[in-house]
Length: 122
Image (tube, rainbow, N blue to C red; front, side):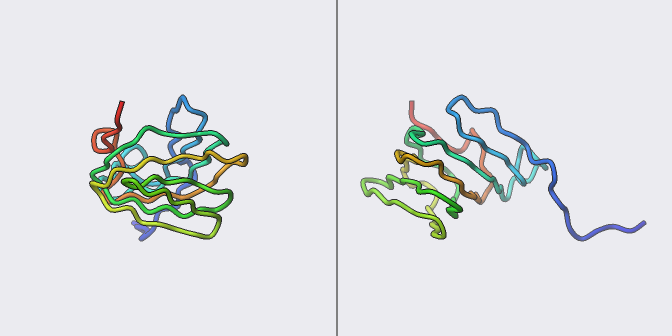
């Protein structure tokens, strides 16, 4: 038997959303049951935003195109294409795209993203 030491992901899990954001999880809980790390390709439409949250995971974001706004505790940070950020777990944050163009980015969470550990405010 020839066991490969790698996995090519051709069929990411498309996370159902109601806010117009496209989320394709390539690795993580929904795709391959990995609780240690998740990696997703995201496309956030212009005008998109999420509620504040205080995740129980570190989140790394790399912006591919467009701009993304982060409100981290009480500080507003805007990243553009080619920039990246790490937001430490247990930090109150809000993600949004209040701009006029779509924002495409990669998000990596350690441990993996889960709705049970994101702690979104209502």
